[in-house]
Image (cartoon, rainbow, N blue to C red; front, side, top):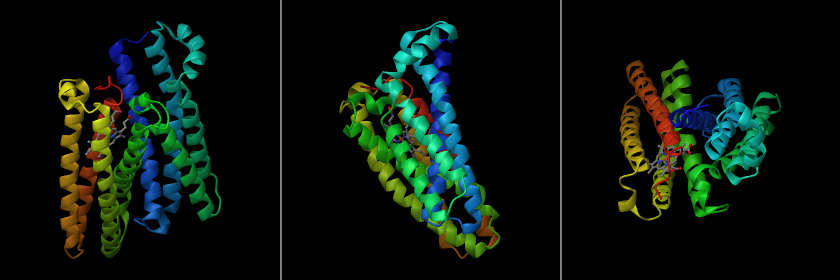
Length: 290
Ligand code: HEM
């Protein structure tokens, strides 16, 4: 069927799509909460959350195929399908089902019209459930349920979703605001939202790393996991530098020129976020360091 390299590529792709889609839906939800975009964007944000959630649901069967192929070494699709039942009864397999259900519930809450407050509450509740199930999968689940690793992963996923998703959504929508004053005010709110998320990302990222190497940094140094983490951190540093540039731009009076600069740096930051999310998905797909 698929070679080991192809299986890894499929695993990274499925994880990466789920990470990007989860971040986009959290970023859109954060745009409501922090009011980084005016109410005229509500329809677009609800649609984005709905489509991203459908993508997350669609990725779960692919994850099941990758997991089953990895666990059983089945050589063809015909050999694979009878094994799904057994794999779904393991912890790694079982958690895919509630993830798919929470993703479909999020999509339904976002796409079916209802009063704004109710819609927002239903999306927030189903995304919260989805975030819990996501943090109970992958390497973070290796210490069992309700562990410190899962808690660190949950904080990390929620905070990275708010930063990465907030930047990606605003990079696309903020430049389309007509007035520079409005762009400036919304840019300032986005900057505050990102700064808050970054505090949680750094703390949970360090915590995640410490638990991931099982407190043995020396022993983990020569693993592929550590190499990928190092590359990821370089990208994170570059994104932080762009965020600092945005802050400096926002300290100047709002003009067409400064807002044009803000849009350009936001777009670059969004591309970096995509790269970091894919690197993180890769990190979550290789053998753990400890
Ligand atoms: C101080 C900076 C950071 C550190 C030290 C850090 C560290 C980590 C570690 C150790 C993991 C666990 C990997 C595993 O399961 O083996 C992880 C997962 C993850 N990180 Fe980070 N991270 C940082 C910043 C970020 C940023 C800025 C983003 C997003 C823009 C991000 C997104 C993610 C995601 C989505 C996962 C889960 C990947 C998956 O399993 O699919 N991280 N991070």
